Image 1 (cartoon, rainbow, N blue to C red):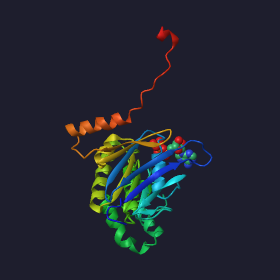
Image 2: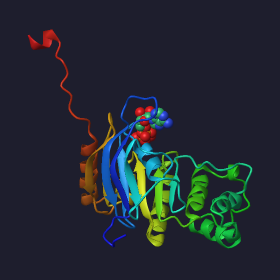
Image 3: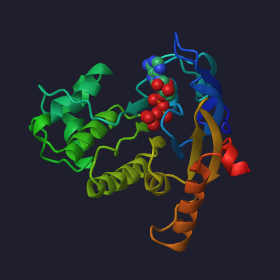
Image 4: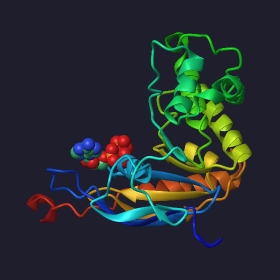
Length: 258
Ligand SMILES: Nc1ncnc2c1ncn2[C@@H]1O[C@H](COP(=O)(O)OP(=O)(O)OP(=O)(O)O)[C@@H](O)[C@H]1O
């Protein structure tokens, strides 16, 4: 790979689910640089989750391809980890066991004793290793899922609305932690969200998608700005404006035209 090759290349992706006529993604193309943070925002049904699953190698597109370091993605890989809206923890395992599972699946179980506590520390759960996953709050469970995602040292973290089930305070806390961790570990981040504050707080670039069919309608550079400041407010307004639906020309009732 040449040094100028982007870390992730999305090349003309189109997708139609088997047995469905609707095109879920239509010729989606963009690139993401090494350690860049990108958010994808868009209305429900614009194909954001489908796109993340294709990038993660969990689904194959109908046409087009994804390349990581210049190589086509054909299957899931530990270097690219997808984390979902719900933590999907195994209730019969304790917290340490849930985190260690990722190492086990990657054939790196021997590393668990030295790594799990460090990962829990990183996500703010030091000392919780022997707690039952089900005893934790929603925010703590999502932290465990984050530690599990980080266990295999992914180069790329794909987050599919990871904060949406959390209360506003926990949401902001976890968002700040993800921000710090991604910075510290130089991870390339793609975050799917419906929330403009998530987008503006975590990334300097946002892709806006529209639906029917799912497609990219804007690729915005929105450099991080202090929350509450004028620049932040301007960027927020710009992002919200880009999400506004196209004005529709509705047929006028005959009486209104008279
Ligand atoms: N496994 C599937 N089989 C068939 N259709 C699917 C499947 N998964 C998603 N779809 C359809 O594909 C379209 C895009 O779904 P997707 O979940 O990717 O959108 P999204 O932008 O992430 O939506 P949301 O913001 O509501 O999560 C939707 O119309 C959905 O019904």
